[in-house]
Length: 309
Image (cartoon, rainbow, N blue to C red; front, top):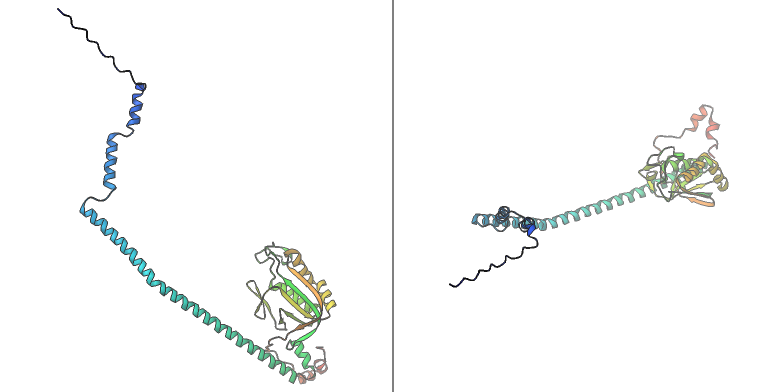
């Protein structure tokens, strides 16, 4: 009896090198649970993409049409309103130009009338002033004058950010290197006190009724704005007037402004300076005292003398 050959079993395959890390491999290969993956895919399909139903498609189409209509209407309105805005702007510019021209014309008329009034006042002084007519006109500033004198120039500091204190005795915003109206008032008063006989600032003749004021940062002389540098011309004995002013309290005040705020000043005596006449000198209340009234009080000699010279 023949014998069956023995069946040889094939050997099992060799184990994988990472067989001991099967759990880690499973986590790496399937990082998201299948249920979660399926739910995420379903949500993406429902939210993203194009609508599938006819109603949804019609709603989307209506929304797009409405958006396009809004954009088109806005563009059309902008195109229509642009010429209207441009026209209104041009009309406003034209009105501004017209009003500016009218104001310039009125200013020119006022200047002509002021000059005419000044000429008539000077003529009246010459006709009725008698022997002292020229002297009265000179003292009133109604006539141009010339003679020796001084030239004083006052200008803002190069840097207008200086600190407070100093001769102005305050530290508010106005204490900078800008020349103020009160500074020019002290300068003019100092020149009068030092012996000046006639004074003009930037060509504006000063009279007994002149006022130096401020409007913001601008200095006004008889309501006319001036710009720096401020040139002060004064008629008088040049060297004596210059020395007396610099030694006076107002001259020292100006020097202190230069030291504390950097305000620039220069003074020099001149062989001859020329001052224009004041535009006009209007007196509405004051009246000259009659000579007869003085004589009745026994003061005729005092009232009719030449004390004004």
